[in-house]
Structure formats: structure tokens, C-alpha cells
Length: 73
Figure 1 (spheres, rainbow, N blue to C red):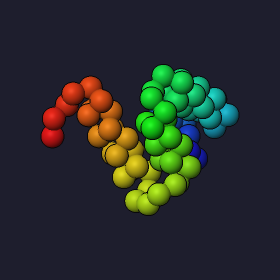
Figure 2: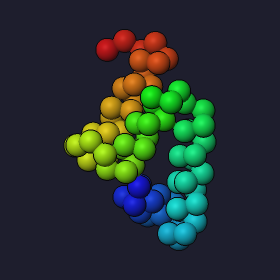
Figure 3: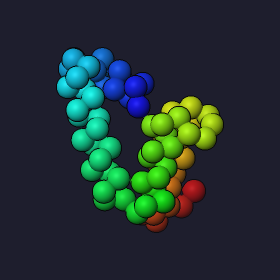
């Protein structure tokens, strides 16, 4: 999650504390709205669980979301 906070801070010009609040708010919202298997993937991606780093985990999450909304690969 620290990498995401850093990127939000750099891209928006927010200080780290405000970027952290923004990221935590969005992550909490997503976890509340998504089905629990996908919400768990958010924890894995942001917590460094699994392998492949944040980019790979985010790709897996986005692939899952695409499948959920009927996108075919």
C-alpha cells in the first residue's frame, strides 16, 4: 500500500498524510462493495501477499473485475 500512497502523493501533489487518507478511503469503499473473494484480492495486492508485486496483483484484480462484468479475454 505504501507504493500506492507514494504514487497518489506524487501524481496529485497531496502530502503523504492526505494521500494515505485518500487511498484508505478508496480501498475501504472497494472492499465494502466488492464480493468477498475480490475484496480479499485487494488485501493481497496491497499487502504484498502472493507474488509478482503490486502491478501483477493489480492486473489479477482487474482481470477478475473484467470477468465479473462479463468481459471476455
